Length: 414
Image 1: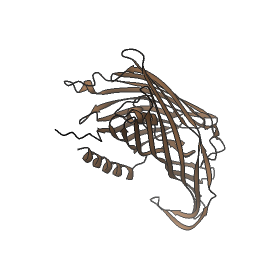
Image 2: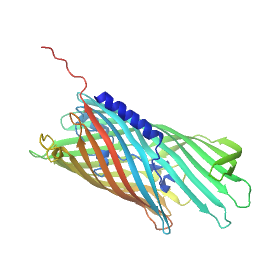
Image 3: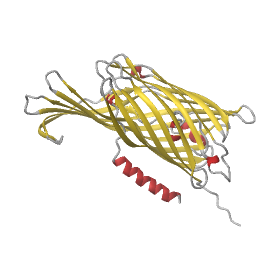
């Protein structure tokens, strides 16, 4: 049965990834795009905290959590976002759908392993401006950065687990600018295409201990050192004619390869903790420090744009009425809620672009063992309408499947 479900999941993933538009944020113009991955649906429904780990769910934000696994776990997540973008004078609404992650975790005694693919950032914007001479500039961008990861965690003793993420990061970002002048027959188009690649590491630690007969304390630390992202770019300059339906007819084209360079991505440290009754409830918080003040050589940084060190605060938890109830399905449902406030590190016109979100969700038991379908909802805002900027009001719906199976069963003979 589990194999049939995985085939269905993979077919669904293929259909989703072929048609996805994962963001429509003007702020994705800067750097290498807007942050896409904010944890599994289970994490995101609790404000995005990565503090909690158990034996049947994947926590893709802390590799030490793989040391806690007791069952082989498959997980896939998708999301739908509806965003209203506003400035002082007007507003527009856009909808996006995307694949968020695909991963598998495998326990092996005190060790646990995992691998998968995650879209890390996303670029998706369309902007335009009209000058005093009635010339028009159109800007658009697509692409983003993804990662393929291999994780390993080990349970050092009954209280402590440590882990390591080894990542290969890759992607392509294309930025396009078109200049349209009313008294000129042809238009000018510039396309900058950047192929991105690098390796990176994350180190994780999880500690848990019973502080009373019923209460358990959990603590978590994740450190991601700064790493250089290699950018192999080219610029294409073209003379074009814009058709009535928006098609771009190329009259002349010239392409130039740019010198390879490195983008210094910022280091990050996450520290968190929480308390709860095992298999009943949990409440935790997490603080993240992002050293984005050293974020240099990004793909796009304007004269009025800079990066500064940033902080993030997340709070959340869950409640299960009775996880092993045989008479009530809803007693086995996991109820989650959380809150987050984040500084993105991006500053425009000396204004910090911040983001907050309020989330809640449920984990619905399906099938045998501890498999479940997770649904999460989040409302939030990003940016501000002041100082010539825009504010984004977004509502996200996230859905995931977390499927469990037991591998390496011992065969018994009578």
